[in-house]
Image (cartoon, rainbow, N blue to C red):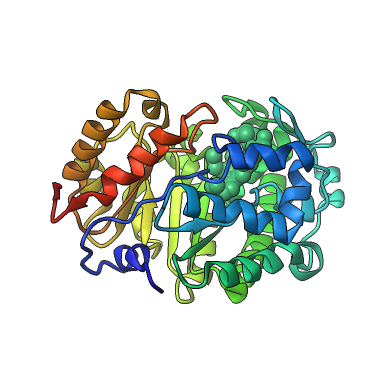
Length: 344
Ligand code: CP3
């Protein structure tokens, strides 16, 4: 691997500077992505390995990030499990027939991932070939709780109250569904690793909606199964947005890194997570709308606060579609200009 900064930071080895990549780095803020979006539907882009490969490489070539992340979506898993998933322009995901009761579980299965998701593994093989060891490739999946949110609520939500009500009023059915998602996800991620993914990230975007006790029973116990199945094969990053209260428990899963958002200080996250895990984050994505000198100053403050070791520079959530490309590049370049713990 020509640029192995990410792999080194994950295993706690010394680095000359922290690696940097951005969640949702392949996406709508890039004009080159918007061009492909005019011609092909969202899932068509995911399902065509040549398109997924081209989009995955865009931020590596245009922004110069230290890692590629597979272009796909967490919702291809509910799709493979038998639910119809649409992506509605400017509205987001829509599942016309969500899971509401035990009898709806008959419409959901644990699929053969090679039968339903082979296009993802083909894309990974193609991306690895095209990357030619320039930077590592991150594969990913949604955490079971975050996938249940969409499978039950049927669409995006600020509170996912219907998904919560499902878990609180029909716990047996909810746990049956969470286990089915977990089993599918383990097979899916193992196949991503076999196809060539160098690192895996689990996205629990809605983990922070649960109380600490519910996070353990509804989310973390399933994330733990996923990390346990994968951690000896590949480094795993767990990003449970907002679930800072459980950083210590997440560190104990054996994940090599934990993602954090901007609502916690680096010092506080480090003291909760302990010294044995790498931290990833936590720049407020909306702050990339600031003037470039402000971005530079704030990124330098973030780097100084995290320190140079066991740290991956990233945003605290996905990049927003209205971020100017030169602002995204300023974020990445500021990290790349950081050496031995100081700005150059
Ligand atoms: O990070 C990357 O660049 C890799 C690709 C990636 C996408 N989705 C592509 C995408 C990844 C890692 C995801 C993960 C994902 N998808 C999450 C977890 C991360 C997070 O941001 O919380 C979630 C919750 C989803 C579900 C999803 N997919 C939503 C809510 C939306 C609509 C809102 C939005 O941001 O557009 C999508 C669509 C989606 N997934 C787009 C992209 C590039 C936009 C599609 C388009 O309009 O072209």
